[in-house]
Image (tube, rainbow, N blue to C red; front, side):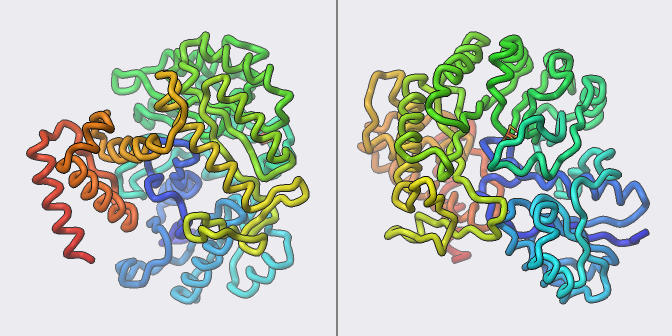
Length: 461
Ligand code: SF4
C-alpha cells in the first residue's frame, strides 16, 4: 500500500467563479472522484494530499509521494492532463502514476494515448474506482470552503444519445436506494446538495428517492438540492408527480433538456407546464440545448423563438465530439473570428464560426430579456447588457439587488464604486480567490472596504 498519495486535479480552464461553488450551471466542478479516492486511501492508512495544477517541490512542501493519481475530465481538455503527467513524472521519477477519469476512460485504447502512457510510464484506470465509490468525498482535502455536498443518485443512463459518452463511461446502471441517500446525507451533514447524475429522474426508485429528499432535515433544516444536468422532461411528462416532488424537495435551478428538433416543442411546452403547475416560475426554468450539432442554425433559432414563447431561459451547450482532444474556442480573444483549426465546427450540418457566435449572442440576449424585460413587457435593448453586468457584479459580492440603472448612470459615486468592484472582481478571478461577501455593508463601510482592496490590487500589480 502506498504510504504517501498525491491526488492531482490538472489546471483545467474552468470558469474561475466555478471552483467549489454551488451557484450555477455546469459550474460545480468539485473533483468528487479524487475526493472519494482520497477518503479511500486515508481509510487504508495512507497520507493523502490533493493539489490543483502543477506544483513545485517547494509548493508541495517537499511532500514525496510514492503514488500519484491524476484525474481527467472532458476529452478536449486532454492537454492539461498530459501537462500534469509530464510535470509530476519529471518531479518524481520513481512514483507510480495513474491517470483516470472521463477522458482516460474514453481514450485509453487510442494509439496516441498508449504512446503517451509509454512515454511517461503511467497507468490508466478505466471507469469508476469501485472501492473508492463506497466512500463519501473527503472535503477536507480541498482545505475547506466547499459549502455543498456532491453526489450521485444513480450511475449510467437508459438512453444512448449520439453526442453523449455517459453510456460508455458508466455502462452499468447503479441506482442508489432511498435509504442509502438518507444515510449519506445525514452522515455528510450539508444543507446544500448537488447531484452529478446525468439522468437523475431515471433512477428506478425515483419516487421513493424524492419523497425522502422532501422529508429529510439536516442540522434541523431542510436541504436545498440541485441537479447539474438537465432533467429528462419525458419522464416528467410520463409522471407529472415528479415535478411536484422536485419542487417540494427544494430543487433549484431546474433545467430540462431539449436536444432534438423544433418539432418537440409541444412536448417541451407540456414539460414546462408541469413544472409551472408544481410551483416553479417559467423564468426560473431553463432549457439545455446542444448546438453546433445536427440541428441546423435556422432550426435552432426556431427553438429559441419557442423558448421566448414559453418565457424560459436557455443553457447552450456547444457540441464537441468525444474524439476531440483539444478546444481553443475563444471568441473574446479572437474577435475577428476563428476556424476549424481552432475548434470543432459541425460543418456537415452547415455550422460556421459566424453562426456559432451569432447563436450564442442570441441566446445571451434572450436570457437577459427573460431575466429583466419580459415581465415588464419590454423588448430587449443594449442597455440591458449593462444592467445584466451590474447585476452579476452585485451577485458576485452577495449585495442583493442593485439600484435602478438610471440612478447608477446619474451617480458618479456609484460608477466609481462599480469600477472598483469590477477591478477587484477581475483580480480575484485571475488569482482564483474566493468571492467577497459585502452583504449588509453600509455605503460608508463599502467605500472604505473598496478603498483598501483597491490599494491591495494596485500594489500587487
Ligand atoms: S439522456 Fe442524457 S445522459 Fe442519457 S445518453 Fe442522453 S444525453 Fe446522455
